[in-house]
Length: 399
Ligand SMILES: Cc1cc2nc3c(=O)[nH]c(=O)nc-3n(C[C@H](O)[C@H](O)[C@H](O)COP(=O)(O)OP(=O)(O)OC[C@H]3O[C@@H](n4cnc5c(N)ncnc54)[C@H](O)[C@@H]3O)c2cc1C
Image (cartoon, rainbow, N blue to C red; front, side):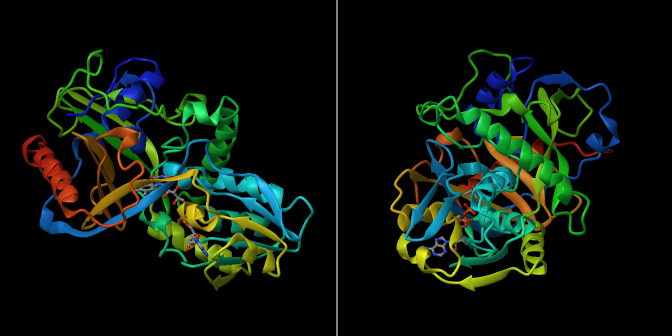
């Protein structure tokens, strides 16, 4: 069963959550308050139809994790300035606007008229759009264009410090840089709320648990590497968890918590980024680079380098470590407008499908695993747990 903490400090609360595999990814940060009014929406939640035969896709990708945090330095190759923007672990979407703002500032230092961007994922697209806004003519060079990129296989949740760095390796200075990236991103996402297609939305997230969250002996996943947690500094951005009174939600469990978090409907959102880039005169060139020297032969003499996990091969950068993640996709249910965490499984309802993710094992799950082959048994087991929740522990209104 899942575990949450009651009024413990926010950091400890999330440690416990991550220990059981990722309340952070559900956006369930923060201390817990008791809900005064549950509101009609909480008692009228629609059930998820969790059955193995409703799984229509399984996607896998590798998070580009770096112990020291994302690479954002610049170097020159020949007469080209290369600004790096890769290695964002499980936070690439969440930090994209903030990280790309830093990269674009470096790239535009001498006001180049043309800028090249390598990569068309979360970081490439946001870098390209920001460079356009800064006045440059921009071409994206990439082997794959969105949505054929790893970024399109992400969960799509506001998770700005998910596997973003190891605390020791990143050092004390990283916290301020991270906060700058997170706050810039959060503010920029405001511009994508309320648009047709719902590219970015806020929705409720529930945690359903049998274990007393204040039990100091509650189980936690091991964290032998010491993943960095930085969310304390942006606690003011998102609501706190509330403990839901018994009977105020359809979930039948001793502990039901609710929070609200930002979610990215990555199909619509990625599509909008592609269109925005094109509408501002952007160009795509499909190409594959095999060594860094090729970048210096581009016509643009300023290059923002966003190859994601592929930096490991392209730049021979072994600081980029794979962290495998798999999503099973249930057929979309528009009437399900919330997420839930139960027994090591995360469920998130997006416009293009219901994300089912086994997140037991915490941040170490998938660490150094570069296999992108789908594991059907993993998804079936996760769907079975979700089915157990909705078949046996969910009482719809009026039932
Ligand atoms: C299962 C899973 C769930 C996740 N959930 C979330 C989440 O909820 N929230 C969040 O913030 N983050 C999440 N992430 C992390 C996020 O997806 C990544 O941090 C992000 O996608 C990295 O984006 P990127 O642009 O660096 O790389 P990519 O998306 O991999 O893009 C790289 C681009 O570079 C191009 N390229 C690479 N090599 C070459 C080459 N040699 N020549 C030419 N082009 C090249 C590729 O074709 C592609 O266009 C998740 C990751 C996984 C695996």
